Every structure is written in structure tokens, then in C-alpha cells.
Length: 330
Ligand SMILES: Nc1ncnc2c1ncn2[C@@H]1O[C@H](COP(=O)(O)OP(=O)(O)OP(=O)(O)O)[C@@H](O)[C@H]1O
Ligand code: SF4
Ligand SMILES: [Mg+2]
Image (cartoon, rainbow, N blue to C red; front, side, top):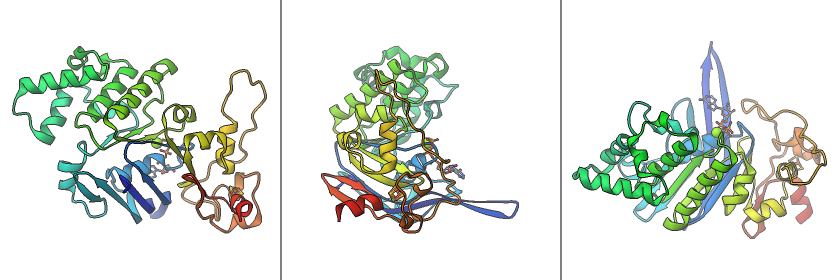
């Protein structure tokens, strides 16, 4: 039984301004599963729908975002949760933080700038399980941050007194305070320099190895996925176009978009120029018909303009949606 089962998910932003309605199809027919005890990476260029996908699966949807179709179902040890029917109260009390923790893009959002870090821990723990014994709470919190390699006095500081890397580590410490089944991290290392990035990624890896929980790691940075993820999904224009074990994504990508992403990664000692992808990223308010990648794909055929490619399974957990691949395998 997968930890998370997402089927045929569509989530759109529907806005209306000066009488003109606009629908942004940010997540458009996405299906995937997360297994227990794995790090699953989601990659894709800016605006392809990564954060929107996370908002839906973490149950943090707010208008103008709306789920139009599909389902999101969790199989936690504590019970099943269907996002379509879970009550806000149940989500608040039993699911958020305890089963699903979401480290949002930009770690400052979870930290209150005018309160010391320990107060934020107090707010979260107090809201979700109460703090009957303050001394025990302080001891447990100090022990928790220490296990994660943070100096215990970090709890007495204000967010602005921390470096970007330390703030991100604190956000991760907060997210793991209840040892959730799923940790979702949205661009946790973007805007950090490479050395600090390495520390934050190692922290995520250590936590996952220690607790055997599942991590959903979203970043456009493929080098991060290469270092951390067990499997990677590549999104393009609101859809998953390829998914495979990390090694396969890097060594044997099949989708032309994935191939472009991998081949444009900088390699030490390689001085050859990298061809850039022609055309612009699609407008999700008016996405291309057929395969959404067709206006930029070097292999596009006539059918690519009209027929949406189906997701094919190529074996060993490798899935790809492309007519060219389909014609090569049949
Ligand atoms: N509140 C909103 N109202 C309308 N459209 C939105 C809203 N938030 C996001 N979008 C649009 O939805 C699409 C997907 O955005 P999303 O933030 O999910 O992309 P992303 O892959 O996370 O990008 P990035 O890598 O820049 O974080 C984009 O076209 C974006 O402009
Ligand atoms: S379906 Fe066609 S346009 Fe899309 S990636 Fe494959 S070959 Fe290119
Ligand atoms: Mg995003």
C-alpha cells in the first residue's frame, strides 16, 4: 500500500478581473504514488506547477486555487485520509504537523519575526498536543534540536539573528518535531550557497534515514535531486512527463524535456556550449494542445500537436509520457 496515492489530479486557479475570467491549469492530470521510506524528488522549470501540486497534497488550498478532479489519498499507520473528504478540524488536529509537515518555499514564513524560536516551537506543540509540563517541553525541544545538529541556544534567538542556512535548519527542526510520516520540502536549498546547501541536504537525509519517513523534495535544481532523491518526477507545464529511479533519470532519460535538462547540466572540465531550449515556457492559462512540450521539442511530430501522450510504464518504476518513446517501444 503506498503512503500517498494521487490519481488524475487537476487543480486550477480561477480568477476574475475587470469581468475577464482566467483559468490557470497549474496541475493538469497528475498521477503518482509515494512509498514509505523514500525520498521522492519533483523537478521542473519555474511555474510548471510544483508548488501548486504540494499545496493540494498538503491540504493547504486557498481560493483562487480549486481542485477540479482526481483524488489524493493517504494511508497512514493512524488511518486513511482522503483529502477530498477530510474535515478542516481533522486536518488541523490529526494530520497537519503530526502526519504531514510542509516546509514552505521561503523558510521565514513559518518563523514569527517578532518571537524567539522557542516561542514558535511552543505555538506549534501547544496547539497540537498541549504543553502540560513546560520544563519537560523545554528539555525535549533542546534535545530535538541537538539531535539534528543545531546549537541548543538557537532556540533563544530571533529569526533575524540567524543565517539563511540556520533558519532553514530551524524550519526543518520544526517540521520534524512530531516525527511525521511525510515531510514536504519546497525549494529548501534555493538561495543558499553551495556549502550551506550541502549541510541542509545532509540534515534532510539524516532525518529520513533515522525516522524512515517519506520526504517529498521539490526543487528545480537537478543537482540536489542527484544527491538526495531515490526517485525523481519531472514536471512540465502542469504535468508529470517522466518519473524514474534517480539513476535512470540521470543515466537513461527518455523524455526529450528530461534529456534536455540532463544534457544542459554543467560538468566539470566540459567546455562545450550547451544548446538552450528554443521558445518560451508555456502559458498555463492557454497551454499548447496535445503534448504541451511540442512547440519546443526537437522531435515533435504532427500527432504531438493534437494528441496528449499517455503515460507509459517502461519497467523498473520508469514512466514516461511521449509519443516518440511510445513508437519506439511498440
Ligand atoms: N494565486 C495564484 N493565482 C493565479 N495563478 C497562480 C497563483 N499562484 C500560482 N499561479 C500560477 O500557477 C502556475 C504554477 O505556479 P507554481 O507556483 O505552482 O509553480 P512552481 O513550479 O512552484 O514555480 P517556482 O519554481 O517558480 O516556484 C504559474 O503559472 C503561476 O503563475
Ligand atoms: S510527445 Fe512529441 S512533442 Fe512531446 S516530447 Fe514526445 S516527441 Fe516531443
Ligand atoms: Mg514553487
